[in-house]
Amino acid sequence: MKYEDIIHLFQYTRLKTREVEIGKLNIGGKNPIRIQSMISTNTLDTHNTIEQSLKIIKAGGELVRITAQGVKEAANLENIKNGIRDAGFDFPLAADIHFNPKAAFTAAGIVEKVRINPGNFVDKRKDFINKGYNADLQKIEEKLIPLINICKDNKTALRVGVNHGSLSDRIMNRYGDTPEGMVESAMEFLRICVQEKFVNVVVSLKSSNTRVMVHANRLMIVKMCQENMNFPLHLGVTEAGEGEDGRIKSAVGIGTLLADGIGDTIRVSLTEPPEEEIPVAKKLVKYFTERENHEDILKFQPIPVNFFDYKKRVSKKVQNIGGDSVPIVISNEKSKNDLIPEFIYLGKDIAVNTPYGKSNYIINEEIWEQQIFHRDHFFPLFSSYSNYYLSEKKSEKLNFLRINCSEINEILPKIVNLNNLVLIIETNNINGFADQRASFFKLMNVNCELPVIIKRNYNEDILEDLQLKSACDIGGLFLDGLGDGIWINNQGNIDEQDIINTSFGILQASRVRVSKTEYISCPGCGRTLFDLQKTTQQIRNRTSHLKNLKIGIMGCIVNGPGEMADADYGYVGAGPGRITLYKNKEVVKKNISEENAVEELIQLIKDSGDWTD
Ligand code: SF4
Image (cartoon, rainbow, N blue to C red; front, side):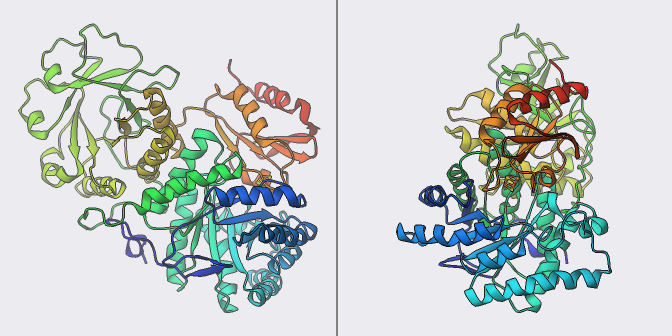
């Protein structure tokens, strides 16, 4: 069974899943996409945990997750739940469990949902059972069936929540840390749930790597379909970070799946107070639900991409665009920082003596035809194929042709074999993601290798709205290897520098172009051992000029090292006031004082030769 047989690629339609009851909140089926967050206070701090839960709900969250690292914390969920009910609220609570089945047993009798991580529910790290696969599964059954029985008795829902960074050694040995391994890790547990006739189950496959997260969820859909399962999906990008980066990264991962109708509940993980995640999540959900009943995009075959494996569309190189070049950025103004777009669009508003710096210029065809501009730095933009065709003054090196997705069928036979031409593809459809994706497929189906710039037009006055919408619209195309450049055009009142930063941010979050340091910082929970937001800011202030580095900043040593996945350096809470530093996956400084830890991290980067001033 293929992905495109299950998902509607050309029409926004939510995938049908089973309805799951979580207290008074139903997830899946025809229910809206639910919004949730997770508490960052200590679970034994009843008062502050209640306060923070209420803040999440008042912001519009519908479900609150609380970590329960041990039986003591799990038992305290009773006090937290009672306090919330006494305050007049009846929203459901979920307990988050790692490494401790006993805590899960306790929590399942108290809260409405329990999340377990198949990577560590039974298997401890470095504890590969390896007595044969069936013996391994039996060991899982021995722990999972008692939990299922408690859930059945208490009408408690279960989330089988896989994290890319904490797969069991058993899965790692068979599949590596791949999307396939993540799916199998979930399926082992889901099969036992089905065998025990327990279906009040939600599933999630998260990663801080958007490509892995998207591929894993797509594979999961197909696998569940093959095995007659339809559990609702909870979506999230782990350790997305904070601010602009966290929002863009979350929108790229979550948005790409929501665009295909996948996802019944979402959590946007930001290294910020949890209630601040909620407005972001709400905007994402609204953006997709608004596209129901969009203008038809006619179906066609074949579908020329592999939805589970990254492969860049083949394009020929025209100047510095296409081929094996990184995707370029086009902006409407010059950059004031060191994120330099390759091209600036000047339109017709141009003086002959416009100075050129590191960027080149795109000018309208009628201005170009005056032939007075420096041919190495100015290039023409043709607004229609007929203008391009009829022009006798094309550039010998590089021409841009702007077309709308609605024109592609008509134009395609005429352009397929042209040279020195880059397409700029726009869309008017409110499901512009599907419209532009269909245009790429049409190009691929006739082996048209012209480079393509993905251009989207907005009218936004709020930067966060522009970041989220453009990341949802464009990021998913780059995740599938489609696109040789990005051009975000906004008519609203947002500074062009912010738009340039957003363009580079989308390329980085889609993993096709690295232009700045990436911070893989966890959102924090009851296990957090230091002030994550303050420390992340301190580290960012000192290291943001370093390019091509990934720095993990993780609140605890229990999950942190696994979750920070492919970070080059890691700053991980080891105990109260104690930090352990990692280089790649290796511990290099253990239990150092928190006071000096940022300095020591800087020194480690310097000693390793990765520092520049
Ligand atoms: S890494 Fe540790 S502190 Fe951070 S969210 Fe995960 S469990 Fe909580």
